[in-house]
Length: 324
Image (cartoon, rainbow, N blue to C red; front, side):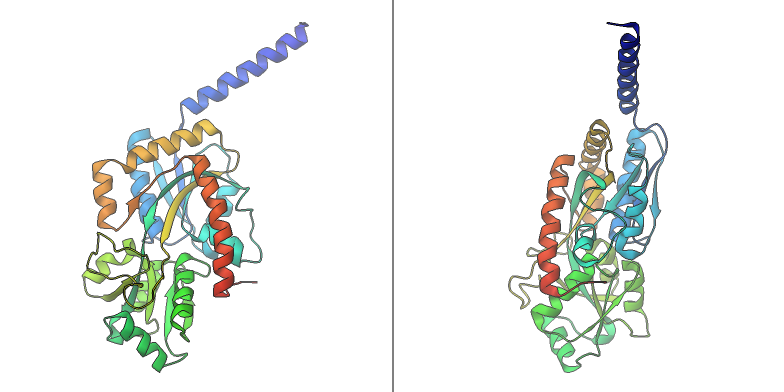
């Protein structure tokens, strides 16, 4: 072997050792978890809860940054442009898979520009109604809406979000004439629903963001959007039980990084997140918020994302949701 070739081989091997060494010592600086919605949203709650646990595990600060707007795509674009080293992550909900189906243009390719890390969990949505409506059941709400066509408003945490899609599915299933009012996050929507102005009459929101509001009596819990009841609110019926057979649409959360993040780093994050989610204090904290932890490998999350994107195309078409 020539001297030049020997030098090239040595340099290549040194680079490989250096890369592996860096991955073994991940993270070596502050880690950011971006959230595409306002503080207090379901994604925000989960990001901050997991971030605190990971900070303890890694011995490095893990900070949550809220970049709300454009159905979560503002945060996603920032992650796309970040160095693929695992130090910039994002927690997403259903909207991440839904956006390509309903938005005419996105500043990224959902399937190609991100690396899946791990699924985080399932969180059902709850249909909540303003106390000003004076309704207690799904049947009462539907009767009221049909008596005032075009005069009842429902809120979502943004156009193209899971809460928007659930609202449109309810509209189709019950044959309703209602007006959609998008906000930048669940807290803003709930604040309007609880307000005296009466601008917002009902909404679907993750159980984690409304459970304490319902328990305080500031909003009325009507029904769960999923096919099974939640242990966090066992007395609250499902939509299917309440008169809409087959209605089933829940929320999910997952963790992503930029595309081309090294496999060793992705595997480490996924392993540490799985360990965090099984810690007794985490299980208890998530249970009080109605969240069911569930983790996957990075490869499993990438496969799930592709499947979910295809499913969202069908649902968005049926609900006639398209944003140009």
